[in-house]
Amino acid sequence: MNRLIAGIGITVVLGGALARVLLGPSSGQAQLSRAVSAVHCPAGAKGLPAAAVARAADRALVEAPQLYPGLGAAMVTQSALARYADARGSEVRHQCGRRAFDRTVVVQLLFPKELPSASLSQGVVFVSRFATGYRVWKMAH
Image 1 (tube, helix red, strand yellow):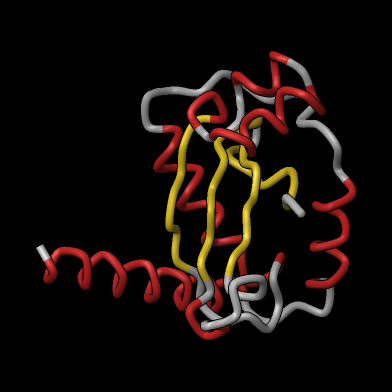
Image 2: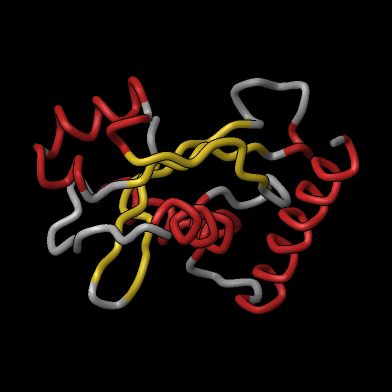
């Protein structure tokens, strides 16, 4: 069991590193972070297929370096449909309505480099599927 957990952690960290290499440094990282935070609701979000939770988690890892610049590699600690995401899921429903609630995955991130700080080492993003693919549409604060 410990080997499985360690393997998953290594895979996630390597995935984050690979995403940084593929995406490269961007002068627009802070602008992207602000733009995602400014978006209120996922207009045009599509219905979610069975693999949506895993795909949303993958997308969150790809976007994490731009959304949270300087925090290092991210790991997904939890990913769930908004309806199963307790307070964060309720936040989506309250702010954006039932349609967005039904079409959103809440992904919780951990940035090990920032531990033991609870506030700096954690992040939460809302991800939906659009015509162009999965995308983070909001960073929770």
